[in-house]
Image (cartoon, rainbow, N blue to C red):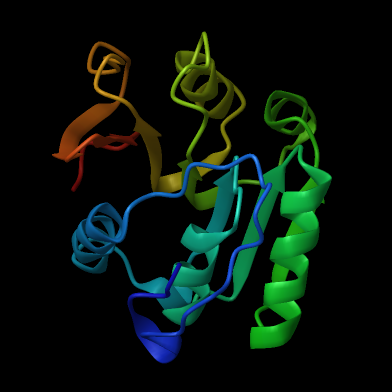
Length: 180
């Protein structure tokens, strides 16, 4: 795995075997951050990374200057790995070991961008959307981005903005405000 942009561009990170993850491809990750760089100012946002796994999306945000990033995953091994990389690269990541849905139901802190990369076979991926919007976890103008497989269609959910496809990786973007 490597960081593709920002201050740590090109930094290769060795991911230990045995982590229960499916990392986003570099191709899809690069496309995602190209889109985001035209929509947001990285040094002014607060990010929530759900189902963070190896933390690769959080490292991209941190490498680009995001100061407040919260990473949530239920795997103790993933959380330990993210903490170790955060310390190694001097990133200020807050790592929470928790079930994502429990975290969302108890959290009241709003974010500017929420990224969710659940297992593609998660039965009700749309519940992420419902939890975020029902609990008002996005600041005005904020984005929810859900990564999912080809069989998942989230286009009928409220606040849907667009879907982007990169190979087997799909990103559905949601924004409460109509401004883009």
